[in-house]
Image (cartoon, rainbow, N blue to C red):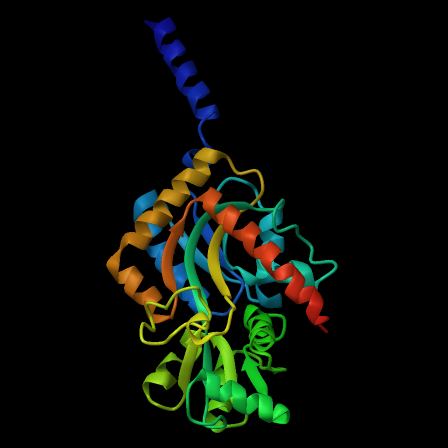
Length: 321
């Protein structure tokens, strides 16, 4: 009896030693790091996920905001974290597919230094005209800009962002030399758009959606390959004769070296969270599309976007200060 009991205990101990790190640390808190201040779309989506993941995983899941360097600082921290599933980052795609082409010493390799876990949202951008532009459709506004190059400016939430380069691609595709005006965030850019200081804005739909509904500005086009569910009446650029597509995503990442079972368990929790109708409604409210992607699908999407942006960024000659 005593020998059998000792053998059973040894078996349990051995099984515990080879259990997945996440299962072994199930009493520990999972942190989802957000590289931006509270209140923005990345933060809100992270908190929606955390709330639902607590129930799915049976663990405490917290969001921790660590803003800085447009989301790159938390990726540096993630790179050095233990691969036990306790430290994750919800990152907009810009830090993974734009920043690597802008900075010589970014401090991380977007492919080798992280473990893709789940794609969470996809989204495109809105091309919005303010009172500083003439009335009419996109073609009318672009023709006016071409005839008035000194006024052919577009605002975005910042230099070196996806909207920055999306605006440059728009100008190239339309044959209009657009000049970029960088703001410190989408809100000040939208205010100058409303005030007529800048005639056009290219940024996430969430920045101008409510102003569009109130009639203060006009969203003329979306940059995706199909119409946005948040703006079903707004045509794409391609529908209006401009051959250009620009989109982006939010992805959940872990440190390098995470085991496949840990990744799968977290991914299932994310997938379950995104099936919740209330979660979907909140995400759509930000002009984003809840769109779960598996770890492998996220890795493929990231690699595709990384390749897509290389040439436009290098051709622009832009270098961050």
